[in-house]
Amino acid sequence: MAGEGARCTQTMDWNSRRLTAVIENALLEDRATRDATSYACIEANQRSAGTIIAKQDCILAGIGCVARILDVYAALDGAVTSHYEVTTHPELFDGIRLHQGQSVAVIRHNARVILSCERVILNFLQRMSGIATLTRQFVEAVSGTKARILDTRKTVPGLRMIDKYAVRCGGGQNHRLDLSDGVLIKNNHIALAGGIVPALERAHHNRRGSQPIEVEVRTLAELEQALEHGAEAVLLDDMSVADVQQAVARCSQMDRKCPRLCGNRSSVHLCRRTDAFGGGCGYESESVTGLALLVLSL
Image 1 (cartoon, helix red, strand yellow):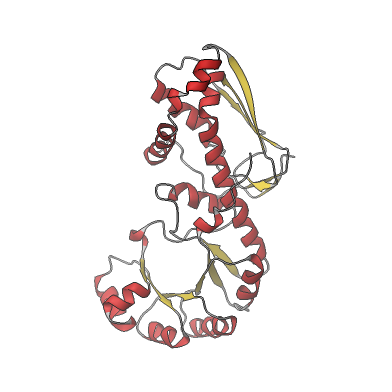
Image 2 (cartoon, rainbow, N blue to C red):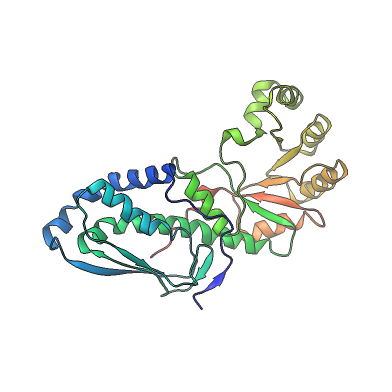
């Protein structure tokens, strides 16, 4: 058995133009096709094999990037003639739990190419698996409740697609991919619009199609304003457990979507906060940037 865990429900298209550009930028940033050390020390036609090993228990994410990085490198270099082979265990997939010392993949290819692509491959795998691993910790912290873990847009510029995919591999759910995904009225919008009520009135008048309208609230009084004036969902910003309990009950009475809590919390604090959902449902939004602070060793 390769490990345990759930397969990521949505696959990643590593051949897409957007992800190809991300990989190209990573290789160009590292000047991978101008690797001075490998050129100086390794024979041009030498073949070799490299094994990627998990140095700690983790949730795997991004295994598909390995072969794609080799493909993009070959396109950038223009002189690669050898063919590669990437071998993984048949029961190994994104979302699975790996154990310390477990093999992730074996790469057989030209030795110079392996060395030149090594850091970029590991950077993708370490970052994505780090996000997936910490996401799984949050998911397990709310296990047994009706809460769900969502991500945010607080991602490294240019890497949002891979960060959000890694969240899914860890068992979390994606919120907005970008600013076009829905109307989320936050404190700055409220201040500039002159308050919750005028902000909501304009949002209902100006939104495109059936875009959902969500409002960030900090107090129970703001929650009442938002619900009474057409908020279809609410984001509870750093509320106490007692206030969250009241907010959940009020949203249920008004037949609105499950409230969403925002924060960047420890798993212990998270358990206390999501207990406030009681019999209702709800979402806890965590910063993907915060989750990415755990960078795994591979």
